[in-house]
Each structure stands twice: as structure tokens, then as C-alpha cells.
Image 1 (cartoon, one colour):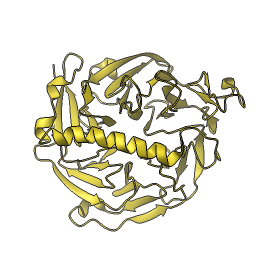
Image 2 (spheres, helix red, strand yellow):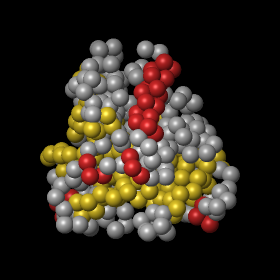
Image 3 (cartoon, one colour):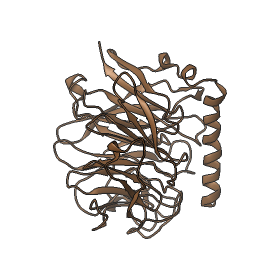
Image 4 (spheres, one colour):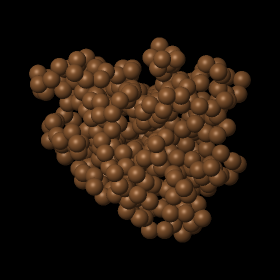
Length: 372
């Protein structure tokens, strides 16, 4: 299928999902939180329902939650996000697929398809946001997997992924299907990892400082193949298989004969086919029970072309001290009831140890707390 037609079909299907919310009446009436199942002792609440298309999140020390979007083209600021009176402001509505947001030294960084921009001194200017400063415009212009989750790493660099501009294709690995990083001023752009089809979430292990990331598996190989992945970068310039090998052990029907799966780094965990694993974070808080410490939480956005829907939930991956995944379990589910009424897109650990979850279908931010 031609890339532009594939993207159009995806957009039409996701627009149909959004219509479920719009036809249900008011947003407040459309969020049946009693359907969300959590482990014993956990509770979920809505912080705001006024962030249509909510994707990646970044929380400032002052408590302002910045939220990116995809098709809406907006970046939001939610002041007093964890307090009694959250207020939503629009920082910009002119960027192209600004899914990613990151904070550094009082400035807000936002992704666009081909650019990274910066809003300086943003919290002092929420009512009159400044024009964005272009940090880098060196990224490809293709919209297919062109949206970008971004985050600053422990080394002070801004990490920026570049997805494959297709479902399956072999492009320049120095430009596509990789994770890159650059200095905050846009200089010293370099490739960190290759063979990454489309990562929309990553984080660094609290102890080892190694980069971990989710990766979405390719389409058009059936309902159950290949799995989405949770990966771990342990050395510079590692290759994670795309487009030759998927999920560590599935040779691609078109490109698999060119290189063996044994040549590539396999995933730490296989997450299931078409679950659309997006945002991920290590749990570094103290509110949840000790067994949750340094576990991985992953927002599964949910399938769009599977005969039986999968995903639409938040999962927990339990690791041992060596970083091996010892088990996976569903942490939060219930957004899918025949048809989805919500789609988790990102997770973020708040300073109080609660877990924030963005939902781009319901336009909401949730907080999950342990309150037995």
C-alpha cells in the first residue's frame, strides 16, 4: 500500500474513534472511570478533560504540565495540574504534529515533523506565549511516522527519534528508523541507535542510566505478528533489526533474506502484536508499594487494524536487578468496551509518586494513586 494512502486510512479510522466521544455528549459524561480496572489499593481520577489529542507530557518543577498533540497541532500548558484548579492554556497551534515536549532551564522544547523548536522563559509567559525559536530543522519532512517523542537524557543531550517513512522499507539508516541526539542548541547531531521502526516513548534506567525505548512493529503480517518491543541500549550504534528482523526472531518477508536476525539486538520484552506501545517510564516514586520500584510502565495506545482489538491499556513490566524482564502484567485496563472510549498515549511519574496517563481520544489526563 502506498504510504500516503496508508496514512489516510489510519487517519479516517482514528477520526471514527474520536466520533465515539463526540457523539456521546459532553466530555464529563463520556468518561466512565468505574470501568477502569486497577490492582487492589489503586485509584484513578481525572485531572483535566480539556486537552484534546493529549500525547506526550512534561512536568515543570512549578507544577505546570506541558502536553503535546498529534493531529491537533497544539501544545498545551496545564497550570496547577496536580492541584484543585487546573487551568489549560494553548501555547501554540501552529506546529506540525507536535507530539513531543521537553523542559530544560526554563524553556519548553517541542517537536514538529522536521523541526525542534524552543519557547524561552515559558512559565512567565503562559498568557502571551513567545514565538518559537528554531533549534534544529535538519529532520525529514515525511509525515508517516514523522511525529516525535523527545526527552533530555542524563548526558544533557536532547534525544529525538526519526521513524521509518513507511510501513516497511529500507532507507538511509543515518537519517531514518533511528534515535538521534543533539545538544540543547541543536549542534552535534548524532545517531544513538539504528533499526528502530517507530519509537514514541523512551526513558533512562534510574540505576544504569541506559536508554530504554518502545518500538512499534510493522503492519500487514497478520493479527499476531510481529510483537511491539521494549528495547534496551547498552552500547553506541546498536542495531535493533528493522526492516530485516522484527521482535528479535521474525524475519521480514521482503527484507529478511538480506540479513539474519542473529545480527541484531533483540528486545528485552515482546509486548504483543499491534498494541501500539507508546509512552514508557520507569517508576521512580515512593507512593506505590516497593515492588513497583524501577518497574517499567507502558501506555498501549491500541490497535487500529487488528480483527480483535488489542492494547488500550497501561501495562507493567517487572525487571530483575540485571535488567531482565521477569514478567508482564496489565496495570490499568477498561478503555476498550467493544469500542474504545479512551486511548492511553503517555505515562509520567509525578513528584508525589502518582502516575499520570494521557489519553488522546478522550482528551484527558488521569492520575493513578495508591490509596488502599
